[in-house]
Length: 382
Image (cartoon, rainbow, N blue to C red; front, side):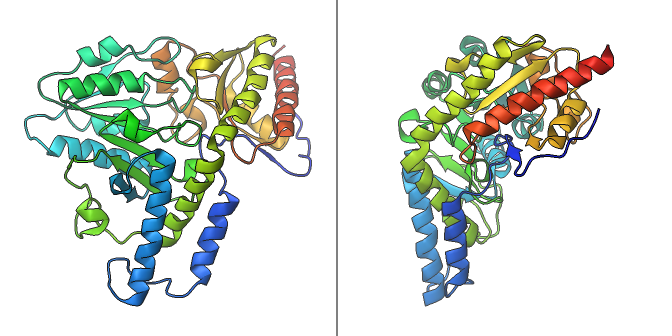
């Protein structure tokens, strides 16, 4: 297959992996770094330390406003991976008798691998990637410490019944952790109303700086900290906070508080254009739930009889960046466990995800480039 030169400007449609830094977040970080007293430890009572403390707590309030919870619930971390680890480890350490964990088969690898470090039960899903509430709750035992449930799937976008599961877990007296890393920038979470015990958020997936994250802890809940060695974050996560990056996360959160609903509507319209194209294109299907049951910014396409790597390379040569739902296009050579759990082809898919920097023309360029690449590859097979 030839290698056409990309037109000026690339099309980035991989926001589910990481979203470019929002302009408001970039400005906030630069203003902080250019200002006086940057090196002040927010745990100190001198002027520079107090200046850092004020900036840190302002960021905490911005994040809490965005997530719909109290600022005291917000624990800053290095990202969703750390937040998930802290939630799982902390839930197990609360009670040496209750160490069992329940999770769905389509959870992120960060959840799966931490669950596997102790007794656990994996619950299957239907062909859209949705868990059955009765089956998930039926796996809860007397020694269950935690139930994991993602808000929306990271490969196919399928929404999970988080409100129903949270309410049922509260009745059973078992903690529940919601992985909201994929949903946070595109769904009004309102964690205070949800009532989940633990919720993990990733900064870089919402247009904040990389290396930032949140573990939202329900008011009144105490879990042992994963990282010890200091009293930072009210003794819930040791280590001096990354104030410049967290200032940027706060700015991104403020941006989302103001424009998040509008962004979600625009994202759904753009992914709807991709869904419509797939419905009328031979050899292409949408994997996961329909639009009403999925995250607005993400759509996963199954591509019949074509391997994902040459499709990705062909699109990249045309200046289009997307991802394959198959893990064999990234660090691992194994098929996607999410798609395998759904009972669909785990090795031939494309994941397209839009975000704050996406334009309508980006979607049109993706559709034109994908049609051309598939035609070339299928002609070569013929």
